[in-house]
Image (cartoon, rainbow, N blue to C red; front, side, top):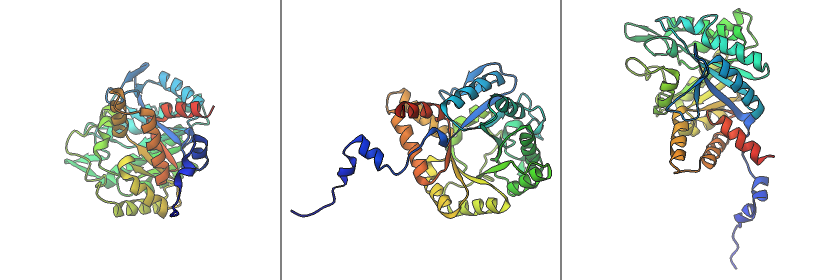
Length: 326
């Protein structure tokens, strides 16, 4: 009989498949994004993201308890302020919504890794990630306000600041600002490779940050470009980034892999709102097995090279993982 490879030998049972499994995820891989709304008591559902809510500070503390019990090691905080102005002043106010949220999280669990989104889009009426002058998003002037925001988050107790604005030179400016403020211990997770993506749709509702005019294509990356992503990441490494992120995740697995192969820095990916909501919508209609699909996606992110994953699925996935590992 002609000889051939019998690959199925290593798939014969669940125990065998676990034994030879090459990649796996666990709750230790997750950072959970949280939307904190200034002045809110309790929580309000985000219609476009089933299972995700806007939280007041009271509910934020309860959320921290739940995440800690589930073994999720980190959160990233997004703020929704009561007031917006052209200079995004709520973004860097000492008692701003994110600053107060950082303090609340650290009071509840000092060991939880607290990351903060550093951007201006939620804090100005134009809904853009930088300062707007004569209908244009200006780069260099925006850096000053991004630095103020990052420093204020760090002073409130953030462990990691994560600039998502995509202004050129922001990482160097923030690193310099943190160091000059004596905050040399605070890490920078750069949204190094952030694409102008249609997958962000539900986030616009969640963060109240839809642009009032135009779009963000003059500063976020073109989805067709991968070599440019390597240049962006290399610049951020040179400027002092401690970790690098690719956003979105699902449509850019190849970019995650290229980043992992080229850089020794920790690599994160953001499993964004549109990716989450598509799964949720299909699952609610009974079209897919949510648990199986989410697990497959998370495995793909790890296989591509992500060291950790920002995901709205974190709580559900952590519960499923615990059920399987009792």
